[in-house]
Image (tube, rainbow, N blue to C red; front, side, top):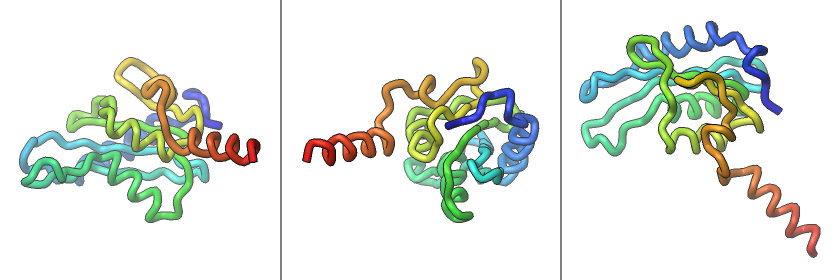
Length: 143
């Protein structure tokens, strides 16, 4: 289960996101983004956006964050924040919300432009591993 927003040291996460944002590769948009998350084992991971001349191959900060999650041992995300080049909170795009959902604990808390919300609030009726696990369990019960 995820943590409540009061349990999270959001200033520490924001600072990690800001530090990651400074490493963004953004020669085309000039819009650096940094992201940071708390993992269920206590680690803080981060990522930044990495653009590409063929735009469609650009990696969002959330993509590099999830790559770091798996490169450093895996786990599930329990809290997440994302900032722009001015250090202002950003809302992840829909694609990235799905990516975060895939790697989150149930009830993961996100810092958003409109306050703290759970992953289910920012991606209602989502489909991902939890739904596949529930389907598999139901299928086995019917056998």
